[in-house]
Amino acid sequence: MPAHVEERLAGLSRVKVIMQRIDPCLTGTDRALCDLLRVACDAALGAGEIIRSLYEKPHRIRMKGKIDLVTEADVASERAIVDRLRRHSGTPILAEESGSDLSADVSGPLWVVDPLDGTTNFAHGFPYFGISIAYSVAQVSQVGAIYCPLTDELFCAGRGMGAWLNGRAIRVSDRRQLIESLVGTGFPYAIRENLEEVVSLLGRVLPEVRDLRRAGAAAVDLAYLACGRLDGFWELDLKPWDTAAGQLLVEEAGGRVSTLGGGDWNPWRKEILASNGGIHGQLGELLF
Image (cartoon, rainbow, N blue to C red; front, side):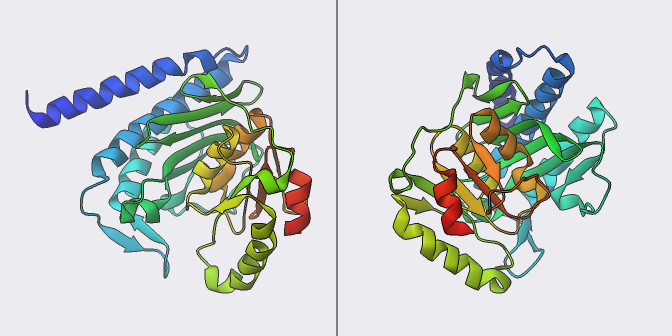
């Protein structure tokens, strides 16, 4: 059997196995929500196969800004996701690489897609990136899936259905002291315009925590928070596709999401503070 056929069959087998793993998640009484979650997971897994196949190959890179880039993997992943979502329904899609208008009507149902969160990591061979897909209604995420193709980890959540990792229910950590916490953050692409604030926030937080991580993929950071690998996370100047799925994961895993000042939050807010809930106030006092 040709090598490329074997690779394809292995990929299909892996997708089938992980789809079986999400069956325990689909226990909600809202069958429509369960169907949406299955579609999101299926789309994320299919895109993950594409990204994994391109990971260690030469990349075609296009610059969107001085340090903001796009690769062939972003484009191929988004095309596959959009095709899958459109086969399911005619629900509008807000996707990062399609030039979507952030001022578009978001009062109704909307798919919110990041086909490759952590593109810079991917382009440099740094193995920390993922695919993020959320289904939102009136700016409230109802379904979320984040897939990390290199670690083969599928995080997913449905509103009122809990948060899951490869079919296992997950919860945020139970830490209550900031000094015992591992906290994540990220830097905006417009770092020159935000440098003073970014450095100021780092200076306030770093001495008060056990340690800090800046890995470069907000969706994955939020998934890690949901399963207890991080205890808190904040970032400035984000887009809806960075956070729409991760927010739901954190909340369904028992955590809390707000603005830096503790106010109401949705994925169209550019700043985010997320935590296990136990350190939320302590971290927020340093950031606001």
